[in-house]
Image (cartoon, rainbow, N blue to C red):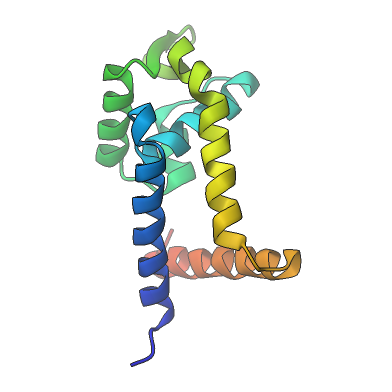
Amino acid sequence: MEKDCGAWINLLSHKLKKRMDATLQDLEITGVQCRIIYYILSHCSQGPVFQRDVENAFGLSRSTATGILQLLEKNGMIRRESVARDARLKSLVPTERAAGLDAQVRAGLRETDRMLTKGLSSGQVQLFKEIAARMLENLDAADGA
């Protein structure tokens, strides 16, 4: 039986998560935590990063994002700081520990991407990204987002 698009995406997602988690095991972070740390490190220089930014960037529910961020905070990767204009808002600030892992996190992401795209032309990679973006738009439209 031939796999449909959803089955292929699910299979890729599962294998990618498993490989990322194994690669990052020595750093004591998961693949999802790695991507979120990378996001915060990449965006904090441009201004405050908030939980809702992480939710939107990764398509996470509020409760899922809360759980991941609480674990990152507990493990000393981020801290939450009050924002002067609104004490209810807490910006996500990477700690020195997270900054120290930045090079390893980036290397892990690059290596995984290299492995995923091995044997593909740059045109094929670009086409994949366009197709994946369109599929995401289709799902968002179906959900009314």
